[in-house]
Image (tube, rainbow, N blue to C red; front, side, top):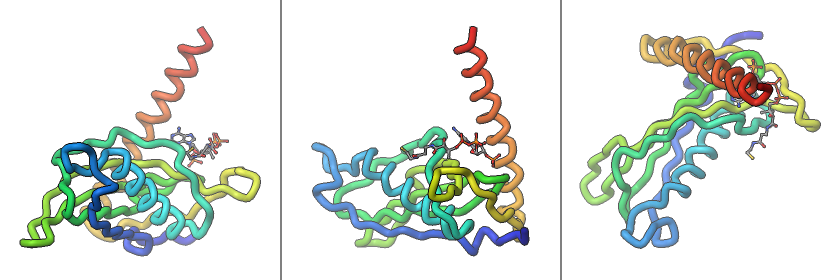
Length: 162
Ligand SMILES: CC(C)(COP(=O)(O)OP(=O)(O)OC[C@H]1O[C@@H](n2cnc3c(N)ncnc32)[C@H](O)[C@@H]1OP(=O)(O)O)[C@@H](O)C(=O)NCCC(=O)NCCS
């Protein structure tokens, strides 16, 4: 299978924070942001693979800064690396004050998506070909994170079968 560039599946999702998206403090709900992160990552996975993709796992999501009512949320998603049937998607969230255009990095996440057929059976996906030093760093680090995820899964399985 020919490799594809990360830029081919790049997603920029832009949302305005409205009252229904906020908590009692007027800040964006964490759950709403997680939903947007999941959708942006799913779009990147489907663009890369041209297949239906499901969320297999979500690594830690950090919320660095609150996002206020009336601010703009930009969710950027890229396929960092594709393996056999799974892909690691890196997501970065920026909040923008629309009155002055100032952007602040407010969240980051890594998600794993798997391409599946109509019966839920995993399907192979094209590899990623990194095209810059930054993309190469993400590509290499994705393999390290995947090794840790697989090791965690094995440790949990071993613990349950004790
Ligand atoms: C994700 C899913 C398709 C994996 O199916 P499976 O039969 O367990 O498949 P396999 O064990 O053969 O794994 C397939 C790939 O998924 C990866 N994978 C499976 N579980 C994973 C997890 N928890 N975290 C990261 N990767 C995972 C495997 O590493 C493998 O990757 P590779 O082919 O690139 O090496 C299946 O577990 C599923 O359908 N889960 C529900 C998904 C869903 O509904 N998500 C929405 C949230 S409710």
